[in-house]
Amino acid sequence: MRSSVSNYFEIAKKMRKVWRFRKIIVNLQLENKDLGIMVEINDRKLPVGIQSFEKIRKEGYLYVDKTDIIWQLANRNKTYNYLSRPRRFGKSVLIDTLEAYFMGKKELFEGLKIMQLETEWVKRTVIRLDMSRAGAEPETLRSYLDNTFDRLEKEYGITPKPTAKLADRFNAIIVGAYEQTRQQVAILIDEYDSPLQHSWKTPYHEACTAVYREVFAILKADDKYEKFVFITGITKFTQLSLFSVLNNLSNISFEPEYAAICGITKEEVLRDFKPEINKLAEYEDWTFNEAVAKLTAYYDGYHFSRRNMVDVFNPFSLINALADSDLKNYWASSGATSLLPKFVDDMEIRLKDFDHSALLGTIIETSDVTGGGSELFLYQSGYLTIKGYINGTYLLGIPNFEVRQALNEIVLPTLAMRKNNDLQSTQAFLNVHLSLGNLPEAMKCLKALIADVPYSNKKLASMDMEERYRLIMSTIFYAIGCRVEVEKMIATGRIDMVVENTNFIYVLELKLSNNGGVDAATEQMKAKQYAEPFKADKRKVIALAIELDDMGKGLVDWKEV
Image (cartoon, rainbow, N blue to C red; front, top):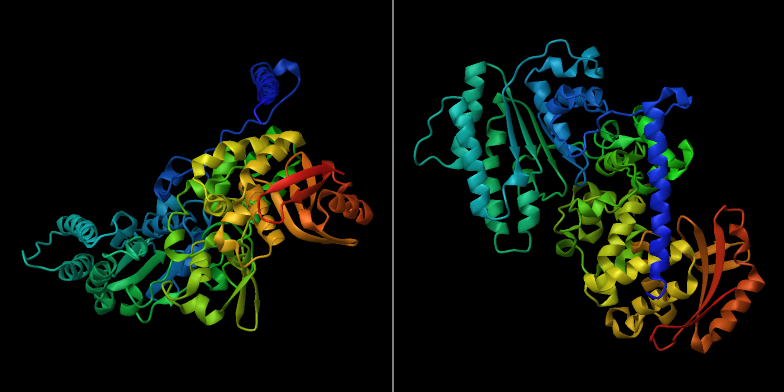
């Protein structure tokens, strides 16, 4: 496998030299206008990792204007509101923007859509809780609330009784703020479910739940002092927390007018990010439209309302990709995958089924995550999204390439029955060899990764042997960043697998040894001309006949057709 590694390092050196040359040219163009060639300079600031609306506005970061939708939400005459969106989808920026609005910070909104809608700019007290900082144990939860309430008590000159419970202190803060300002308060609770998620299936969950019931019951009791209560989260614990207390909570998560309140739409991408897209296109030698198509495939595809199926990009991934001028998997690095084992069993076997799954509307819109099944958790946390709606049933699927790759990276070690660090080097070399079209070395890597997994993994026992191989191989290819289609239908028949990367399209026909092996696979590919439909593509098409051991011992032989 490593015999030709030095060759690839030489190629990499040459590529670096080319890139350095390009950078020199760009620098010369910038330094010397007499060259007669100008380059677009983009010094705009993208808000990578910034959740403060005030910082974004004051320090000149790019802001995608959602303030018309935010104004509509804040003035809809419904006191208690809840929004569910996946991790890293802009919920905290939304909370921060609402805080600035209710505090009457008009200067931060100059030039934005809200200026055409708001005329009064009433300054209100805002009580804000960020439950992601509260830990996953009752002690840390109480400590966070105690410290937050202490700060607010000092701000409003409230001296709590030594024996006062958290609920009583919360009540005194709400009432005290109202009495001092004579204005109803706004209460914003971000990531309300974080302690409940992380304590789920631990001894601390019920105790954390008890704290929620105690403290947040006050929200309903103090409704006359409250102008607006807004709660965000990922998952719904309907019977265990805020939802049991606030039975009149309005869930806006599926409402069409708020489908794009978080995230970035295609229209907004094309309107607000043209310089960054052009820069990415230049780096990768793509056209502008090709760059948009790549960004769309990687980070778009979310839908949050059956009545408004506008495509929504993951804002965290999109902005990072444009800031880096690079298409990478930002989903996995965000920590979004850490809770999967708590809510989803046998993920490695069930992944292909999740991509074409369905949930009744009553389940997806109202059910508790602890009893709604794996699909509900996967939807709420952003691994699945709405693909369609038929007569009371939501059709779900994986939203984009980034999420698909992240999921396959997660399940591969379990599927392959190896530790992740035992796979990483072989995966990396498989990616290198496939990218360069080095078939002998690529097949060595693939053989090493498959080994005797189909035979040894007892979870696969219900599948026939060829199906086991397809599952394992597709997971491997997805995990290294390839596009994969399993059992792709064309006019002449069904191709076992099509694997694509930047430079090549690999058309694979798989045959077990007891079903004719590599010779039968070769004959079938020739007879049905499996490679023909792909030859219009500018990438090179490689047809591969692959023989697999019928007892599950792995890759036996291969042949380029």
